[in-house]
Length: 123
Image 1 (cartoon, helix red, strand yellow):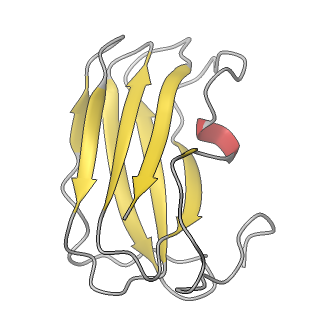
Image 2: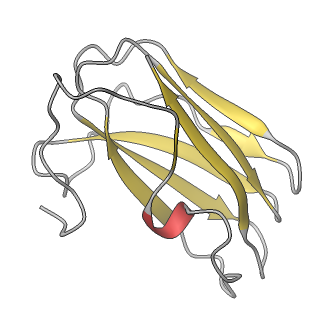
């Protein structure tokens, strides 16, 4: 399991939060176009929404992970969302049926870039 990921607990209370790790807003600008990601637990939720804004165009993805958090499932992940530079977008997931972990991934189309908003709400 990646060091910053723990097993999800469906009894844990969820709250409105900022994404951890590489997608935390306010980090210094990235000077490449590599994927950046954040892994969060979603076990026990009915749905979630990620509001996202970056300073460059790109693609926002959500990929469910196998137990342990190191391998992505390849089937039935949410649709990718295009991101327009400096414009807030959202990714809504209403049908994850008991998945435990989700990895949010942003792939920028140019550099330098920064994350301006990465707010996750759970229900």
